[in-house]
Image 1 (cartoon, rainbow, N blue to C red):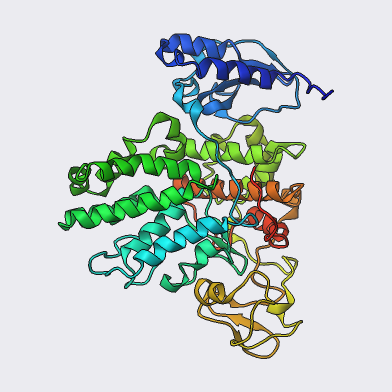
Image 2 (image 1 turned 45 degrees about the horizontal axis):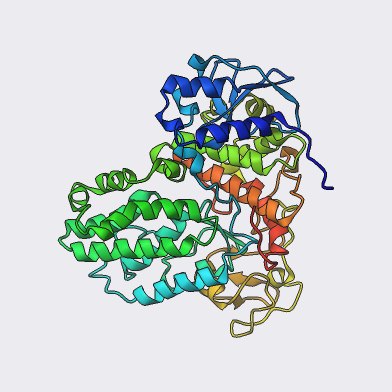
Length: 497
């Protein structure tokens, strides 16, 4: 007979609230009745913290200092009891509307280790090859011109932009085919090192600009073709849980234009922002979380921090572990602590007082950073540019020639120079990991490592949207520390959390 898991108050309340909120009658209830039903199921733990399970099927923690409710995963190993709470004290954003509980959670895994499936890459490549030779005069590059060469048509940018916008956290294995297929179109080397491409997450406005400019230039049919290409790419991405939530949201926004050509012409004529608003207005409530980076960057940051703490559930103290990753963020104006729940804030402020926070802007490589492979240091045989490069871990002809730079060169018989990233030796090419900040606690397996990496990088990108702080080209120290584990095994069968 199978063992019965012990009763857990958090799990029990989740089941109760889900049953209520997923009932079709929930959305027709008055707002005060919905608030009362959620508040009546508030829990309190033995440390006095008060929790409610609310909007977006997530937990909220009450801050006793100022009365705010913060998104925060609960301590499931801690006993709790139901105490109820005043419904009038629950803010509107905490009470679920109903459709928000239907959202698919997706996956926080990065694209390092668990590569994008070959069949998905092949389908994207087919789209790229079918459209990459379009005329750059008919399809001018009005966005992503910092990434692609001038003579690249906007069809290439539309595919690239869709992939990057739909990704939960666009950090890719440098040998990932989904990235290397774009190599011949790049204007310069992508940010990162010889292992990882730490890529920015573009705003929806960049995709809208590709379409809107053509409408304003008097070529609505060309704009429609670009919209169809964005939709086709999003359809392909639906098969991977790391893309699916945002790909589905993008499809709901652009497909109505394909069914009714000219639907968005008036909005596009008013400018890119108006076109973005027209798209967002068609996104249903159940997919609101997927477009939150566009509609509410502050809340999006809170959700990514929630994801990070959840991904660190294997640690004895997830908030303290999460604080070590938050310490990577540049915060010279000390804007971050007030955005954190009191448990996370205490752990972060300990690091702040110890001088272990706000350091990503000044991160530098240390002698005790990651070990560099023999192929890059000259301790093993080095072959010339015409040689087979399969002996170099994580590289192939396309990723070296187009993603990292223009080619490989044996300069002195002892080191291999890779144009675009400089000369690598034992002291260079990697970000030092601050063990004292807590990043030394590694996840127990490959899947959880990739989940933490993706969640941590997503927090960095969300913080950039809120604060304007830069994202280091070689990744945040905590995220980069996880790469060591994944690069050793990244060709293993992929698995998702």
